Image 1 (spheres, rainbow, N blue to C red):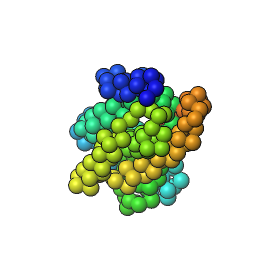
Image 2 (cartoon, rainbow, N blue to C red):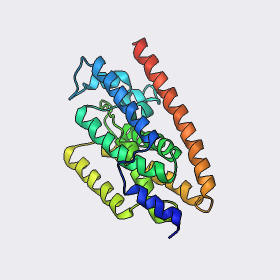
Image 3 (cartoon, rainbow, N blue to C red):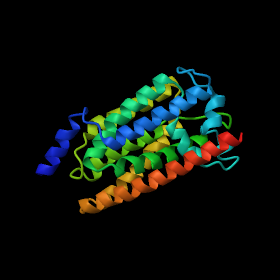
Length: 239
């Protein structure tokens, strides 16, 4: 094992060292949630579906029926209550920081946005038209799936514990079935994360290129996220 890979494993074992980009993304979750609460009348425990739909939730009748594809992204930044955002923020801090400190910040933001889109797309296609789906879990599942796949396809690229990641995915999906969560969105996120892992694995012989690819993906992710939020804001203000 190389010295660099040993350092990567050591950093992952210190979850208190959260990545700056990961923290920033969690702050975005918090700001969006406060906006949701304000629009909904100050509630924290349960944001109404009407408010979620107005602010950019993934409602198939609007996302697919009206062509408001920006909802595929904005829905991944929204949460339905305090427990929902608390769980997703904790999960993001752990997996996002592990990826950020080994592959670079771009490999957090780019794959998160992409997996959020694939998760929201499958959710919109598979769920009833009147469902309003929200939550960062599709993107988070994508990050976990990406890390798990990389641990198999390119284990020297980053020191992820494949057993822990696979167990996490299986457990979370099982909880989703029991609790009635949107596992279509989770499954779509996993697909997105796996595709991102294939890109990283294809570049595994060139760590410098892996970093540059991550930076490019992260930049695209920022553009897509900002543009989607702008569309959501314009739609809400126009309504």
